[in-house]
Length: 468
Ligand code: SAM
Ligand code: SF4
Image 1 (cartoon, protein in one colour):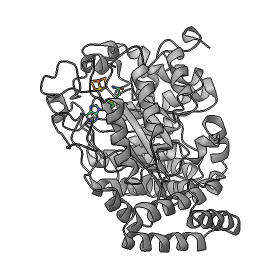
Image 2 (tube, protein in one colour):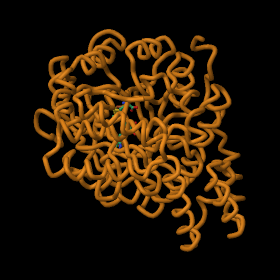
Image 3 (cartoon, protein in one colour):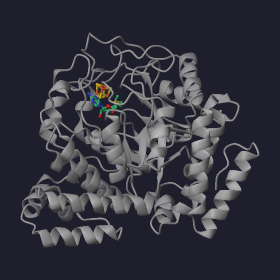
Image 4 (cartoon, helix red, strand yellow):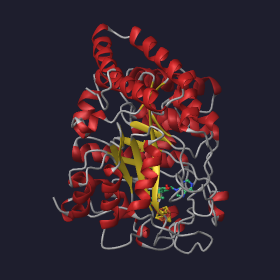
């Protein structure tokens, strides 16, 4: 498939359909809302119209039932696992003019740099030494050298780091949209998920906030996942930057994007991100977003997405505070970043607000986050098994749908958590973690128990990267 064989425009984002769904949804009676929630609790997802109805509820009792339904779905599919990753900012050079972002080309307040291969390796060593196994590599849209060579070389640098049993086993990438040919190169570099946020699906707002550079092209961005999937990248991650346009519109447009990918490729995105705009150096808009989303509405966004696409990972970054992250994990978030730095060089040098993309809300160390998750009864998972076993895209969804994925995810979550405890945690954290692992295994059905125990035994015997 070439560029010309895939969608060229974002015609699949239908403003009229969204407006109609919202108008109809606002009329939904409580009984209708309860029917939708009952269907969603059976893991059947919800339609665009049903999501619109859920997005317009304001009655406190119905909101409570919405959150409770999201908790049920989260628990049934993801159990107590929560996947951890760290962002790795390799460069803040950029040609674009996104009004909300500190990296935009005309921002003179920012110190610019693109990390060298040696600097990237040092950063990765620092992450590996904390126990990280997954990174999300992030860059502005201007690369030193030819084409995307800098991006490809940086991925190679990340995978090259080996520290005893420690290494990065999955590199997800968040960089500007590419051509089909370039996406093929990215796939050959063994990326995990290709992640890209549309920022806003509202064309008018999009034009207002993207003032210069290639990113002004809405259609090229919204069709990026078509090109990525056409190039053979199975796992893609979509998202919207909440605060730019009306959140209900963004939510429904994301669903249209998902339906389009499902219709075209038989499978939707692997993950969804829902960043909210945070203050950023040199950006007035970031301090007073035009459509700021409050915490109450943000909880609804997470809960509705959990119900709408039960098998799609929901990612939350350290943009949010520790307290809110705790709540949102219960409501449906399945992956969180930990100990993030959003300036290039932030893990080995200083955390530098003058070079950072935005202000972060959760400054806790990896171990503090692990301890907190354990206190909530969660298993911090460092698993990267699925994509290395080829369980990506359609194969992943086929497995995930009947709940089978838990046969893999639960044991792999426990074994990678044990690796973390043995190799990186303090003695107290290790003792508490081992006790939690024993409790989780005791509560499993016999099949998962025997698979899990076998993996745990292998890790305890010194094997690393043991997964099924
Ligand atoms: N340059 C690429 C792009 O724009 O797609 C990828 C990297 S960009 C640093 C990653 C994401 O950061 C953007 O897609 C945007 O959603 C988010 N972002 C930018 N400014 C932000 C802010 N002030 N607060 C929160 N997130 C922000
Ligand atoms: Fe550049 Fe991305 Fe920031 Fe826009 S959001 S200025 S493209 S780094």
